[in-house]
Image (tube, rainbow, N blue to C red; front, side):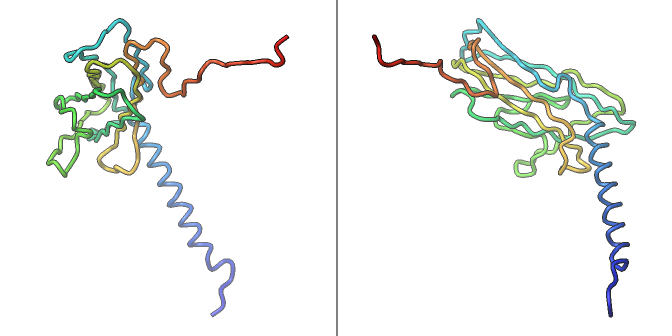
Length: 186
């Protein structure tokens, strides 16, 4: 049997069509959830942290679709936070323990979807920063996934936090001042 170039065309056409619809689905999933603000820069000055200091940061999560959505969130600490810092997430179900990084975790028996009704905004999603007695900076992301497809991030909330370090720029490398020596010295 001899294959002609047209013999593979229907397979390629089906592949391209399937890829197109998969891309549209991914865009639709991402567009149905919005975070406000998407990037939250928080500079806490004059805090003088102690063992009971709690610095809550509020964001709003909106379901833009006409369907109820069930969301999984996943907290990720990017880089090194100062020693002793803890973070805690509160959604419309409850405030989770410091060691809980997601509202869906079968390994610990946790299955508490963050549910939003059609065009609902939940404006009290909170990331608590408990800096202990340490000042410093930290970057934390919370990714949101639709439980219908947890392989695609629907939205991400980015938190940049500085506690009593006014010259700290979270997410960038700090550079030392330029040192210049000129020879010969007359």
